[in-house]
Image 1 (cartoon, one colour):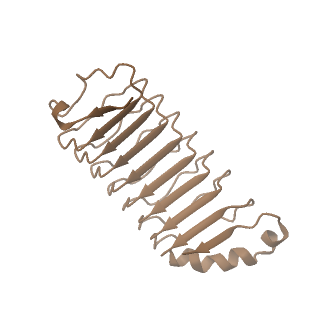
Image 2 (cartoon, helix red, strand yellow):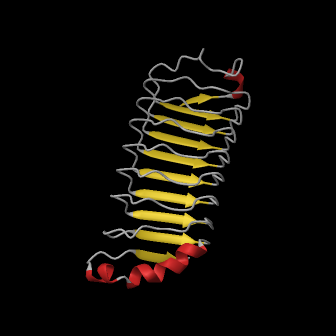
Image 3 (tube, helix red, strand yellow):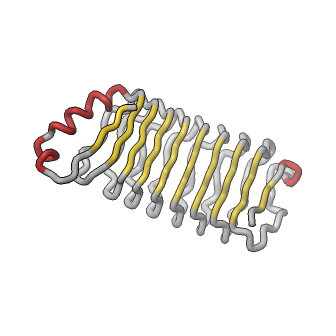
Length: 199
C-alpha cells in the first residue's frame, strides 16, 4: 500500500498530524505549501515531487529508496544509513550528495550546482544527466555502469582496474579521453577493459 499525501493534508507547512501507521511507502506530490517532512522511523520508500517549499529532507533511519524531483529549495541531503537507491531531478540548488555507505544506484538529473560526487563504497550504477558543474568522478570500487550526458565541465574519469561500461554524450572532455584509456598499456594487458560508448 502507498500513502498519498495531497496538498489538502498540509497544515501550516507540515504534515506531522498525519499518522502513517505501518505504511512503508509514502508519496508526496504537488504540496506547494509543504516546508518540512516528519522523520518517519519505518518508512522504506519516499517519492516526493513538486514540493518547492522543502529545503531539506529528514534522516529516515530505514529508508531504502528515495525519489525526489522538482524541489528547487533542496540544497543538501541527509546521510540515510540504509538507502539503496536515490533518484533526484530538477533540484537546481543541490550542491552536494552525502557518502551513503549502502547506496547501490544513483540517478542525478538537472542538478545544476552539483560539482562532485562522493566515493560511495558500494555503488554499482551512476547516472548523471544535465549536471553542468560536475568536474570529476571518484574511483568507485564496485562500479559497473556509468552514464554521463550533458556534463560539459566533466574533466576526469578514473581508470578503473575492472570492466566498467561507460556511456557519454555531450561530455566533450571525456569523449576526448576515451581513446587514451583504451590505448593505455596496463589496460590492454588486463582482461578487463573499460568500454566507452558514444551515442
